Length: 378
Image 1 (cartoon, rainbow, N blue to C red):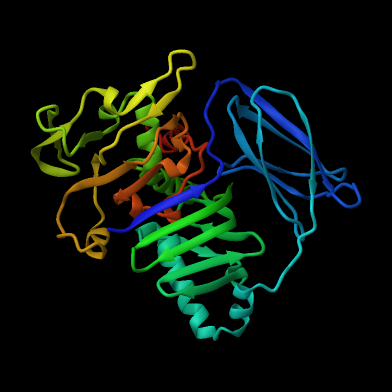
Image 2 (tube, helix red, strand yellow):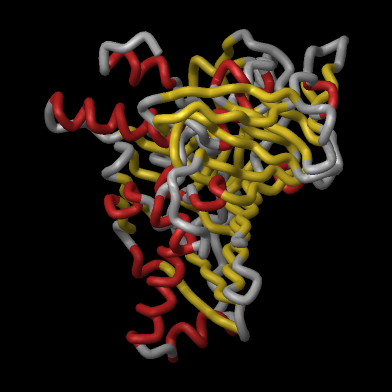
């Protein structure tokens, strides 16, 4: 079974819900002069800005929680730093000019035949963008910046500048700063570390606007983000999620489900009703701590598994509800926007590992906006 562990290094605990802004200035470290046009963004969201002629920036309307800010400029090493919620600080960020070294990977890349590079690119796309229906509408606008190397069964990818992925299925340009990418074909595992920002695309007409809204809602519903938001709010069953442990026989409840849109017969699903086996709530902050030892099996009852997913995984092709596993390696915060901290504390397997970058949404995604576009209440 393929597993995917996205080591995105911008996951921090929530502390409040009010709104605030961050502001500062981007400077060249050697000369202390402004860097106009520097890119400033909140990691893994649509929130961002460009530095003005004086190198100054401001990002408004942020939730009063910890964020990681990413600042980059062509020819300079990017900087990532944590902002303290609710504090008005004028950040002075100095960027160092990048020193390009012809390392072993780069030397190998220069000697690599174009046909081999193209094969590695195809492998990278397959295990980074994914194979879902939406993956057909994703492509890299500057794929030539990618540098590949392969040792035995492990393919690595790097880039010395921002990799841009256009997602015409969900309506975003995704800007990726890759720190680490490894695909192990023997273990069928992917590890990615980096930062990304999402830029919403402008629809050409109402038809495209509605198509993007439909696709985003489909990507969101049943996703790991959807599950974690529902878990944080103790609304798993209400949102269509049913969860249990392999050792929970006798402790489960049986829920009868009937949904003509998904399956034409009544079925029973095991689920735990007690959230205490999953999370602890800190009384002083209302923060939720994910803690359990056994693999958690999660069934999403409102959508079926993709037949292509079943074929690729060697699963018998049949109409079944989406089934995933969440492996907890250590206690972690569950945050209201649908993430855990630290991210390496949990690993998604099963159907969630099928939904790669082609199905990824920004952390500030609000399904209510797309529901309104489609004229729906839920």
